[in-house]
Image 1: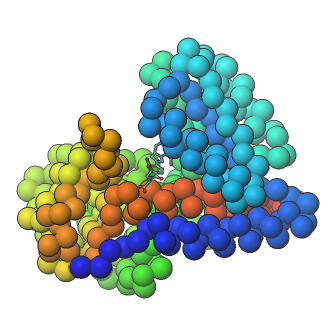
Image 2: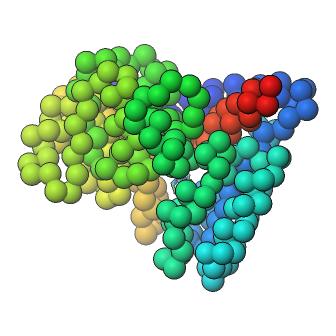
Length: 286
Ligand SMILES: Nc1nc(=O)c2c([nH]1)NC[C@@H]1CN(c3ccc(C(=O)N[C@@H](CCC(=O)O)C(=O)O)cc3)C=[N+]21
């Protein structure tokens, strides 16, 4: 069993991103990202801080806007509109989850599509779904997974890929990215009858269901490549995924760990995509 070392691939990607940032700075442009974080979800507190630190480490501008849980839709919208107009900001991200009284969909759709660093705006989702040519942002976790698969030289054309979980953040954009690369993609979700009948056929099994250690070796074809998108913290503070690592490592051919797998690739992809948006913005000006 080979470990797919997301941490190492992310480090490599971050080094390339830092060089691209330096090149842009020579031309007088510093890529900038703005993260809007509302309320005090403890996991979001860690992720937003990590994004801020990484952006600064790569030489980028980073603005972390923390609003209280009582912030109104109009207040969040006003902050968003300022970033939409701020020439220093190339990527805007609204950290999920938002407090329940806020309309997340309306906020995401109000982000300028050319600053939509998460790739969640319907215009960018539509471009991806239709496999349109040209440059546009895509969801960072799926993008990171594709980068990791490519890094390890994993062939996708004609492969049977099964995705567990149909979320907007992970499952759906991954489905589009993989179809666009000529894979045969099956979606398995909470209403699927006899899910193992599908997962046991998978050459590549990608799991993003938000359930700790739910996938055990019985669901996995011997030799399969298994990608674990889940992240959960146990009572003792240990990080675990949606895959039962100790069980699945006995049958899988390749497997991502948690931590050190998909998580670091997500952050690295977010940084790379902020630089993409900065580069595309100058091309648009000319
Ligand atoms: N608008 C939005 N965009 C997101 O991309 C987004 C979001 N909202 N909400 C929450 C999820 C979750 N997410 C992670 C990012 C990095 C790690 C990460 O770095 N994980 C490390 C461990 C980090 C730790 O020690 O806690 C690892 O797996 O090795 C995990 C999870 C991005 N998300």
